[in-house]
Length: 264
Image (tube, rainbow, N blue to C red; front, side, top):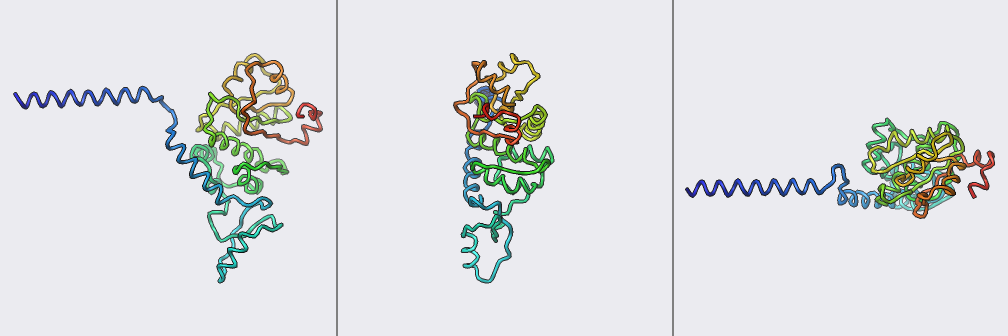
């Protein structure tokens, strides 16, 4: 009799534990981010950015063979000169591949899935600075990878801010033509799918009413100046008060096409 009572109590205890675990799993939304892990990752990335970002005026670090006099090497590394490339013996500061950058796991997974492995010269020179939150003006030829060089920092900035759909609009990317907007949107989709962020493409030739409905949940907005101005005037849900990033793609073309007053 005692054994049967003990078994019965154990079974009831096991059932109670299962019910508690089920209730815990129900309260936690499926696919919701683990905020403790996110905060720990953001802290690590922030520390790396402080340690590995080149000083202003220096494009990037390149490897310097270790000399006999280590003290001289340290002095050379700390000295900020007019050179665009600084030599260093610290391999952590050498950035050649995307995996070398202090990027979140979600961004790295997206880049790997999209087969972005090695950085172009434009990306190598601009990404370390833009990831650190510096304002940049980048001049590069077509095909140099500049679209990715501004989209990655946009996504990372919002990730560091722990942005979600509930936070509203966090970044605007202004492009001169529909074709460039579509191109930027496709690049964003190619690597940004692992983040809990929403993005929208607002260009001419699309249903304005549908765009107005989408405005409420958009975090990243890729748009042409005319369409953006229309929504700023007509769409009640448009709110850019909390904007964290503003990108002007091919700003010279924006000016040439007569959008100077619109941008101002």
